[in-house]
Image (cartoon, rainbow, N blue to C red):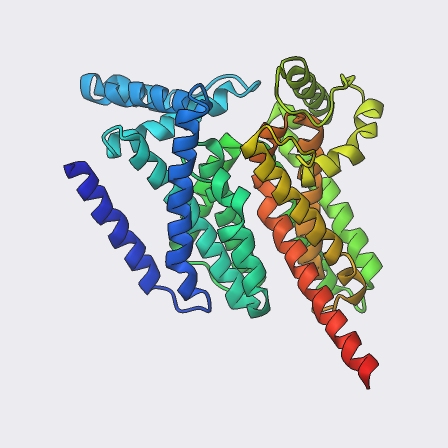
Length: 418
């Protein structure tokens, strides 16, 4: 009980301090969004405990608890375990080992309480997403509602970035990287501590979900390079600017291969095929987006890119009323399809406000990751969790497009009535 009281006080103090620091247009949403995050954390824990007791969550918890207990019985050995480099790249042994080491520190801090551990991890994700939304809305007040929904209240995003999961910490890092980038993009000066957290965020996100960072960093750098070069060119056309962004992104996306062997072109094709085939052959009763075996050749992979894009953005979308949790995801995805269709006309009414490069960057990030995950991860349940890496950005784009479409329709109606 004393541990619960201590951590409750710490969480309330931290949350109140963060709330009092707010002075933007989204201040009123702080406590509702925080409450939703806490409820999602409890839901994640309850669902995994009673419906998926063999899930990775409790594997991570058990391993982290065992490691943290060494801090009491063998502190030098505990430190040695923490700083010993993790080994292995596929199918994720190194990432799991790294996550367990980080989680062991949280286990020590919370006295091995699984709910408290879940809450602290979720709060890291929440504060990172809140900080990002705050920066977005201060820069573009018109984006207020789309940003709030996409990053703070969209069900899949909130749920799959809560609790003891790799995605929780990885997305905290991704959100903070985006925050610092937006500050630089809008000519703001990040605080000194934000640069420190930026380095930490890149490191943690890369270690846990390297493929998120492998797409995000080239996209952001390509946007910065395109804008810098575009300003030096007199009367650069939209087509040339788009070509410049695409060429820069294509060159930069090759760089992560120097830091991770799975990202080298030849190896990447093999990894995608191996991961896809492994899930297909070991699916059991798992819902699959496809059952074909993929050959590790560029031609076979290329033939699956367009279906993979659809799966990555909208799967699962095939109804199965015998699985309640699965159907919730199906309903959410059909609503997303509807919103996407509504947003498409906005492409013809989009007002060039000088930020088209940034929107291209967000679109490229979503499409590349959606294609990648849509082909490599045919298991719908796993895909739903993995695609939170780009889902917030996609929802933001779709909601902005739907909003612009609505505005355009209203303008057309007023013009028609005159």
